[in-house]
View 1 (tube, protein in one colour):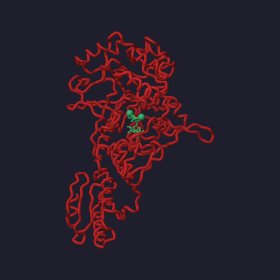
View 2 (cartoon, protein in one colour):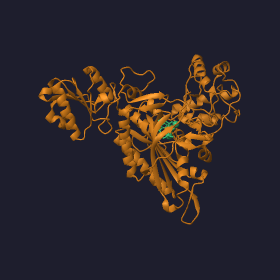
View 3 (tube, protein in one colour):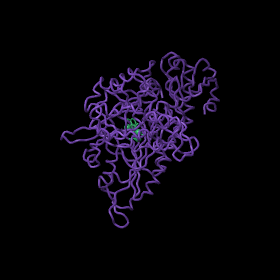
View 4 (cartoon, helix red, strand yellow):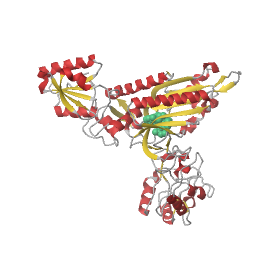
Amino acid sequence: MKQSKIFIPTLKEVPSDAEIKSHQFLIRAGYVRQSARGIYSYLPLAQTVKNKIEAIVREELAEIGATEILMPVLQPAEIWKESGRWDKYGADLMTMKDRHNRDFALGPTHEEMVTDLLRDDINSYKKLPLTFFQIQTKFRDERRPRFGLLRGREFLMKDAYSFHAETESLDTTFDDMATAYGRILDRCGLEWRSVIADSGAIGGTGSREFQVIADVGEDTIVYDKNSDYAANVEMAEVYYKANPSTEEKLAKEKVATPGMTSIADLVEGLSIPIEKTIKSLLVQADEEIVMVLLRGDHEFNDVKLKNLLDLTVIEMASETAALEVMGAEYGSLGPVNVPADMKIYADSAVQDIVNASVGANETGYHFINVNHGTDFNVETFADLRMVQEGDLTPDGVGTLSFAKGIEVGHIFKLGSLYSEAMKATYLDENGRQQPFIMGCYGLGISRLLAAIIEQTADDKGLVWNKLLAPYHVHLIPIKPADEDQAALTTEIEKLLAENNLTSLIDDRKERPGVKFADSELIGLPVRITVGKRAAEGIVEVKVRATGESFEVETADLLAKIN
Ligand code: ATP
Ligand code: MG
Ligand code: MG
Ligand code: MG
């Protein structure tokens, strides 16, 4: 393929809004372009890599007997009302009306849709189990779309759904799916972990996340180096099962010291619907001021607190720091619902600050409808802490290590959560109506693309392996108009094609420096430069991943690059 015929708008400068390398290089190497926040076009190179990832996904899912379908993006509100999620899902749900004023949602996930699809036609246990998947654009109006493809508002997901008559059958499919995900991530060349996870907005009983290890990851995972134990740190169990150390016991006593005042006593009208245990969030700081604050980059609507880890603890050592936080972060949140057993402590210095600052002391501004004394429980707070490096695993045998992860996949045992709500039933062996037992399995294709880059890119640009590279070889004639160079380029292109190696030929009239810099950015596994020694049939090979370079005769080329 001739580079002059492909749209690859490379950039020298780092885009100002791109904080992480996958975002920076996807833009700079001309792979994607943003149209609105969190909404991207995939240009030819990204589209090719994306297709390759999808091909791997399709192969591995076929291997476990899942078949591909395609459901509508546009989903009628009725089915979301049946499941109860029309109101519960929150502001992430992108909705619209048709010309008849009927409500629709742009699918953020498809549990309702697939349950509706199956309930009419699958009426007997004899037709079960069944597993479907689709690869499709999903819509979520994320509060803070960021990090390029890692958190978009429009993104690509592979979502799969399974239907069963027995829980054992669901367990089998769940395990098969976990195996398939493992193979997919291995084939993508990733370092990853499967972790025990929270079921979040989708609901259900058991769930595992597939986390790609990367410093920019928004998730924290804990794992034992010597066993299979790994969990998203938000899973409360790792917190209260961890063995407290001596320092911690001392710290607890400190927290329980009289003189610390609950913020409930400071702020009128705190309210706290209980969604889930918040035990894991409670932290004590060494400083005289101890507070738990909510970070501003997540949803806090009046329904729920989405993700336990979305809470950040800020230890404030000074009044100025406290004031800054109150103004900058706190003040921007609006009413916040805090789970019931969360306690917030502050000393008298903070009391003054709270009273003096942005609306924190106004009823309903930050906390609403709190029952003083009952919503805040001092004893349990003192018993809890955040899990730390070196803590014991829940079985008491291993010790925990920490890592940052990007959640690329999440699989759930839904049970009959949706089928009951939506009256999706089949007849069992005894002719009795039973709700389907279901599983659902998400894998973020676009997020995976970015996660791969986070693990592989270097400071010059992208670095693809042979399996995922948009082209295998970057073939660069220094002077495309030179007769010898043109002839050798054509010869090598043919040779590569005959051996199933695709090539991108930089036929542009650019300076060598420009071509080489673009080549590093684009990141094809092998660069072949056809230059001064073309007449002798000698080219220069450079391996993108290692930087290794050498001259080689055309006759030896294939052996050297394979
Ligand atoms: P997160 O915790 O990052 O918001 P999630 O838990 O909301 O993700 P799921 O509902 O579990 O996501 O969706 C399945 C998969 O879809 C995720 O594991 C992730 O790979 C992908 N995904 C979810 N939200 C986004 C997004 N905004 N942009 C890109 N991929 C996403
Ligand atoms: Mg989310
Ligand atoms: Mg998540
Ligand atoms: Mg998830």
